[in-house]
Image 1 (cartoon, one colour):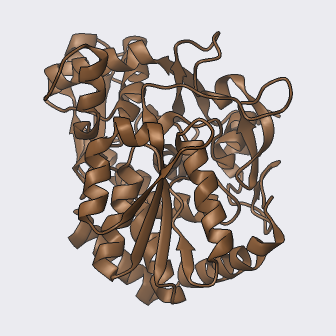
Image 2 (image 1 turned 90 degrees about the vertical axis):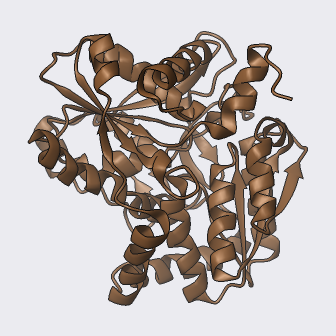
Amino acid sequence: MTLTEQELRTLDYEPDPGGHFGDYGGRYVSETLMAALNELDHSYQKLKNDPDFQREFDADLASFVGRPSPLYHADRWSKVIGGAQIYFKREDLNHTGAHKVNNTIGQALLAKYSGKPRVIAETGAGQHGVASATVAARLGLECVVYMGADDIERQSPNVYRMKLLGAEVVSVESGSRTLKDALSEAMRDWVTNVDNTFYIIGTVAGPAPYPQLVRDFNAVVGREVKWQSREIFGKYPDALVACVGGGSNAIGLFYPFLRDVEVAVYGVEAAGRGLSTNEHAAPLCSGRPGVLHGAKTYLMDNSDGQIAHTHSVSAGLDYPGVGPEHSYLKDIGRANYVGATDEEALAAFHEVSQVEGIIPALETAHALAYTKTLAASMRPDQTIVCNMSGRGDKDIFTVAKMEGISLT
């Protein structure tokens, strides 16, 4: 199904009226949720072109989040590697410490305009939960965050931040006790409380219109990189790199460049203990199409068709599926998807911390690991933009524990 460069350049990358990106996406949900999804779709299609809504969204991004985020030349690291010039899109400098807040502000405003007094969210690494709790506090909304019990243990700083912000954090003990199960529980809550509850989903997964609206709210990242790159080094980047779990930080960077086929696009999945093992979270690299959390997409399952357990050192990438638009981009050949192992991510985590003075999130460290490999294969007059999707404060306890260091 791979398309030619000319076809990719002229392709309409919007989903069809049913929320499909090619064969992927759609709505595979119970009838109980169809009315809510139809209502959300109608509201979003109306409000996204509403000048008052857009002004409020843009104002919040500027004054509450602190946008635009800088495009930073990682000059020392580029010299250490000896290849392409590496730039970081500094989403770690956003209020709450990650790209998640771009999307949660947009969805919280949708909740406000829809008259829903209660919001729910799922979270893995905790950044989406913190961002959801933050915007709920600001707008005076009740907030409940579902989080896998294992992730609560490895992301305790973010759990406390959510509680400080007034959110209720619900520990999910079922299944793998990670992000997949948290998302499942959040969807069960929404089915039960659909009349007064808005589900702020944390990524570009789930039933339509979530993959589109989350992408659109986070596409501010890629739009900024377009003008910043021309301003700073006089052209578009030669390559874009971002980590991919559900895929919101990646698609937010990639989407504005999809028709610019001269810009190569790389999504980096969690290869865990190796793609040849069963201990990873890389459905685009080694999975197959199926239905998960209301959408058709690439996912990881076993020979019986049951969703497989995943593994990653990074809680935010520990998910057996991916956003349907990424599945589509893989099949048509517009994006390249690769894996980085736990070991490679941890090495990049330490190297960038010590060479650039920036402690990255473990999710981001996967993208940094591949950026190093890619940069070494390119010329010094070429450029890579890697999305610094989040800061690593939340991960220091995890890394220290793995290295046998006690912080207490």
